[in-house]
Length: 444
Image 1 (cartoon, one colour):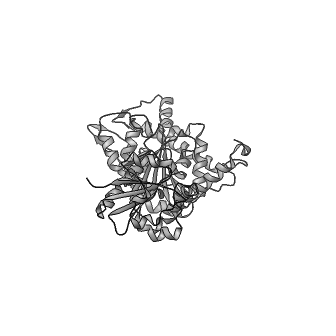
Image 2 (cartoon, one colour):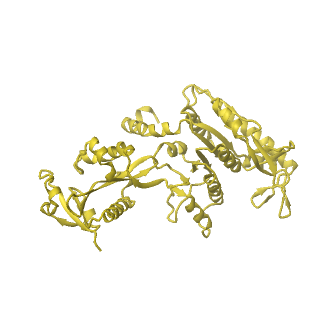
Image 3 (cartoon, rainbow, N blue to C red):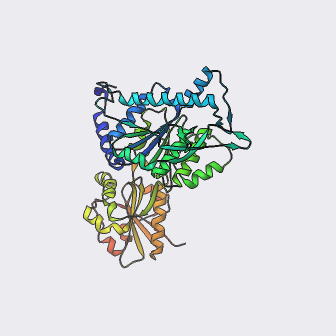
């Protein structure tokens, strides 16, 4: 796309909206795993460019490539047998030689791509270093259920201190799916297992899997944007459904990672152009996020939420949907508010004001961000406000509105007149605004 084809306003808006994520990711440690098939794709340089961009923005990157198709190609060239048991390759002497050769070639290819710095390319002017070494200690899988896996191993230890030292020097770290044992033997490892153990050892902020297929979808084929650990467990224990073997395996890795200190695990379709950037620098992303806690929470507001509430309410105040509230008044009244927070952003809010001298409360400052309407958040907010009102001994709830009358009527609010308001609120009623008044009984 030519620069002249860009919509300047959209570009500026996107760039400004990315600023909080740029600041949040700076200095964080991300472990990124991708398959050997990704390297064979003509679009793989685009992924390298996006990784380079992350590094330039201060993200500490640990990269873990796979090499299965490269290994299998070499085995076929030599007429060697491909044997798998329980999804694991049996690595005999001939296969180990192919693994070493393939992993070495993969490493050199990645190093070459990160070194490339042609003018007028995304890598122009980049000064990127890849560090690697004996950072993963392995041990043999041994004999299991009567099967000797020979040179196939599992991760015994990841040298987190050594990796951090290289990251502190400004390097990216490349971990290969090979590991050496204390006895000097070399073992073939699963790349996603290396990524998992590296993320656990480093207590990484993110573990990102660039998978071959789509991320998790529901029964309607829609992307599942976020999952808690309990939801992942339920999905993995449910009867077989549309999950691919790859997605099921990666969800198991995500479960183990988040259960042992990794903050977030992302599953992304590596075929989608810019998936890394869209996932990391937009609020809702494009993949499936697995977190130990809820990605979105409803809670009592705090003074730190005032800027987010202001940003949410201002557009509605400008178009007359809500009454304008000065920032200092919001700060004074913050204890009356509840908010819905999504990934550090306030996307919905509401306030409950008990009316002095009565058993009535007013519902005010009720707003849901346009991008998140229709998802039940308004109903959840209203339910919480009503519960809070009952807890405070209130038996009626008033709301004044100019544009959302039907929404409230559909939820049990009945039309009323300004004269029906308690005296303290009636005196403050703005005749010029002419808001419609609705009331809901909280009794019964």
